[in-house]
Image 1 (cartoon, rainbow, N blue to C red):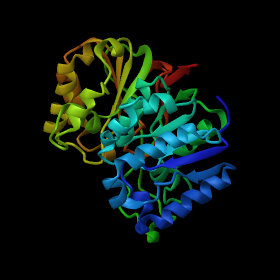
Image 2 (tube, rainbow, N blue to C red):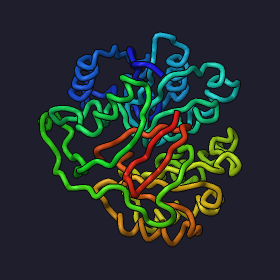
Image 3 (cartoon, rainbow, N blue to C red):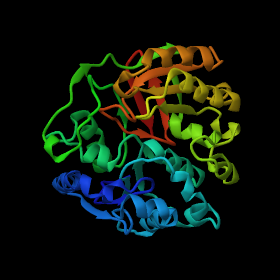
Image 4 (cartoon, one colour):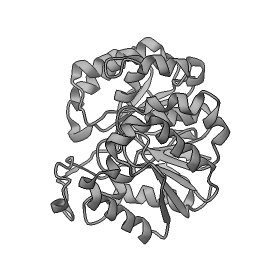
Length: 344
């Protein structure tokens, strides 16, 4: 791994980055990347807006392939998430397009980009989960949130993340994203660190996973009827053999799923058999900590494996601030020491 000199922005899900109402955020992000001494480029379709990218998943896929093929690009950064990245599957896997294009680069995204992480896992690339351009680099506070910025800087200066420790604070979610909000901060709350819900406080394995809402759509066609069918056709979700010994990361979206919905999502994974073969389960802090206690009870009651280590309150995903978690690297979790260390 090496220092990042050039970052390419891709819009693989929603095309929001190309809309006029986020122009002030876009300019903020450009300025901050420049201040870090890193070159920034936007792939050809990254700024084409919501309607165009909704109608052209093949163009989104083309951007990803082109970014991997460009030797001058060190890091591919997702603009933001969304909800239909699965539609890229045929354009990346029908003729081994992604397999033939992929090269050793940093890939960073979260939320619906969970699908991209699973795609890249299929072709053997280690990726990084937890932040996005619009959500983190373009944060409307006077600077990137300190905890988030620390991890982003570590990634672009060293090409890796050595360890994760809890943030001392968490923030209420931002409600005003207008230009008037530039320089404003969110309410802060003290954070108690990693919480062991059950099992051993020490465990190891390679981490994989992401947004539980997105993962649920791989099994359930309520949001998009063809999602389970396409994901199954291209074997997107790893088999139980591939999950053996891994650590599953689950974080929940801004939809703030009800306890009933969260229970359904956990049951879908239990029925798949994943909780019987993994070494541990990491749970991201929910946005605004909504339904947190209910989620904890569901995890303890519905996972079905009382010996499985479950660690909650990880600062990753939709709650701010956000760390960055390496996928495909051996992680050593120790909740007694409040640290997750990575072995490269």
